[in-house]
Image (cartoon, rainbow over all chains, first blue to last red; front, top):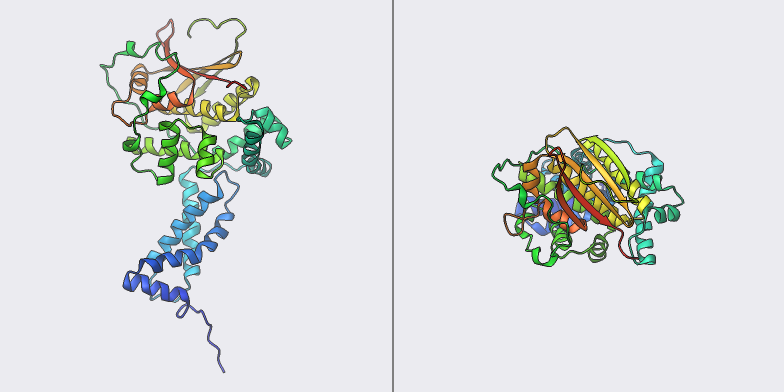
Length: 251
Length: 134
């Protein structure tokens, strides 16, 4: 007697969902496939944690790889979707780190300190009702201020600032309008026109964060509370978004 | 440089090439100064972002000086010499409503900023960050 596998490549729930998506254009089937395989993405993403990028961000990048795999999958293939998707997810994550210029090998001790840092910042912010100093963070983490600064740097090293573009050359600008100016408190509320036109190509989450920071004038900690991320994560997203916007403008 | 520092001012100076690989050096120096001053973690991040964005606008010039004046509850960062047109272009008011340029970033993340010209005609951007009231 022979026993067929209940979920081989040709009769699995994946197969049926893939057929519904690719043959009938059923978008809900595609969404179901993404849901079913998010645990795989999370598992693969965890391998790349501790490199200065939040696990949540790595998972999002991995999910893009999963979606691409689902879209590219050919029904004639005799391979399980998980087998096909895994290299796609890993490739997307690796490409993300490569594009971000993540080339620095961070010592494990600093990685671990960096991981603890975000929680320590949040605890101290709540306890003290303000952003903690470096010395307070060092106390909290049983580290030196130098180690704290290095650990913060370890977390930001993946996020390079583009210095390639050169500024414009508007020779007729009146320098006297700016020299020695602005040494005063700003009329912040008067100048906070909508930023919407500048945020065009950014993902919705980043647009929202930039609006809160540069339009509403919220602090990173206040933004972190609203969007459910850590202050350090908000900081990284702001940096990256400003870099992306600048890259877009200089293209 | 600009006018001589006021009494009881401590100075930290760094001359650094401009480039991605040198940014950690700048951030660490700012971090050390923030620790010395008792600046909050988030205020440090603001100051680092201000300097980073300024250097991003500095374009093709090979190096830049960073002079940090620590005075009481505040740090003034002087960044330069920078190309004149660049400074004017970047720090003039937004040309379009809704633009998120250098000026708007600086208005948000530092307590004040301005442009100084030194005796020999070089331009420095001045950024000031204060320890918030505790």
